[in-house]
Amino acid sequence: MTKRPRALIFDMNGTMINDMDYHTKAWQRIFNEELGGNFSWDEVKVQMYGKNDEVLERVFGAQRFTEEEKKALSFAKEQRYQQEYLPQLALLPGLANLLEEAYQQQVPMAIASAAIPFNIDFVLDNLNIRHYFKAIVSADDVLLSKPHPETFLKAAQVLQVDPIDCLVFEDVPKGAEAALNAGMPAVVLTTTHQREEFAHLDHILHFSADFTDNFFADLLK
Image (cartoon, rainbow, N blue to C red; front, top):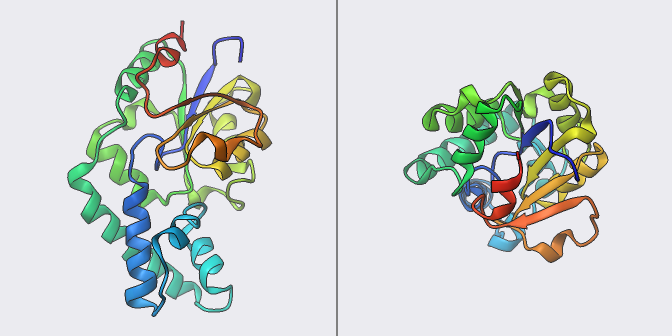
């Protein structure tokens, strides 16, 4: 991106907040303690993308659970996650400054996440940052999860900004791939995945552990 972005679109988990280990831990306990599995940390971590029911289907097969069982397991997992993560809940370093700068410059922003509204509300309301975002696209708002581009395209549509003029912030390869599929450049936060895991993607402008380096200071100039 050689020109200033006209809109900023953020994935949430692992991108705005560094919470993916808490999601992994909550799922691992559900899989092993409640569903009789014997899954290692690495086996669970690799499944940490998409909607909750998709995670369950990838791990246990499409026929294992009824829709009601998937909803109940999903809610139980999110309750565990929120209870354990709440004392640590915080934006990644530097993000508060970027959100405020974009807000003051009237650059529209969106959250485009595979999280359910229950978890998005948990973050926005506990951190008091809801006012920054003109659009929120959750798992409940799309038919097809990342890497399908629907999540990001819907966010751009609500913001009324062309996809190519949006900048996506992501932390996982499937999410970055969704940005590519949407025709949007991306920035990757290396909270959960390393730079080499994105080597197959050519639309990534920057890699960073947080939002404190000079790239972000210059982004909206």
